[in-house]
Image (cartoon, rainbow, N blue to C red; front, side, top):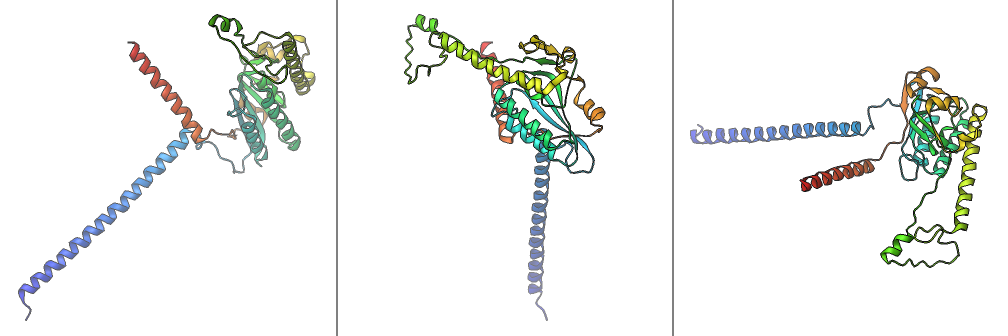
Length: 315
């Protein structure tokens, strides 16, 4: 006959084991659910971040529908910027190579910049148009397309503008300052050692040298003539070849049509819909890197914080 005391101890042990096992199962389930919800939160934040940066949410490449390929050229055209030849040309190459591209739209909003960088983009547009003759490229001007921006635009098949766009500034500039009088007043002596009589070319701390100034003006004239030739080659008979066009002046989009600098009024959406004949645009613009984006955001936040602190201190 079984001892009641042993039976009770066995029952308690069994209940304890069940409770421990149940507790472990509950902890395991809680851990799994915790991992699940943390994963969901991470995915949500990941998507939200990349959506905010503009890296997701756009129409994607790879469908069978024909589209207008959009490439943006914004801001100053210079190395190590989003408007550099490297960034713009890489985007143009992807746009032309995509099998569903029916036409390319280069949307420009730029005051100009480096003639070298603008020349690289102009050359690449011409190369791509020759390699893909069935794909047209249209330039669309938003607010401004001046100097180097226009240097790029003239490589397009046609240029479209808004009536209030600003177009032109076909010229070259080299600006500097002279500090010789200021140094004398401050009692500062400029000491410059060079090997080569013109190595201190246009040094702002030395008196202006007429020979060096003339040489600089000759260089500007040569670059200006290169600019003129690019514009004449790009626009051809459409351009009204009057001297004022190459004087560095700017015109409204409406007036620039009369002068033959551009072809017609139209936005990127208009060109896609009415000229390329598609409602669908795919953005091929090179996006800003995550590090660069956060560096700029951090810089703006710091500047705002400093401005607020300064305002607070002045009160």
